[in-house]
Image (cartoon, rainbow, N blue to C red):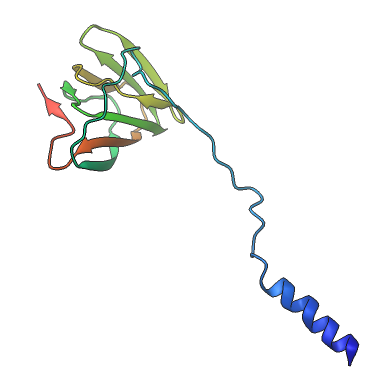
Length: 137
């Protein structure tokens, strides 16, 4: 009887253990910055009601995006393909899959997919409620 109770107690302890010990889970900081990719200091984040927007942007091969600028802080990670980003001052950034980007703010720029593969990029925008995150030229 004691042996049976002991077995039940031992197995009941295992029943409350998590299914996974977290092995294989990791978190890697891809970028932490107070400056955009061109070296400019990011603007202070305002006191208005915040609105977070996350976009998945796809750019077909051999395609240029329109000239645009962002009035808000934003950053992203290139998921696939290769992307060239060119500012109005002709500063140029070359990205490949897996690269992070802290975008320029209040600076006209555009992206170009010069490759034969589509580009996929996930971009996070820290904006203000009901305000645009991108302005087109």
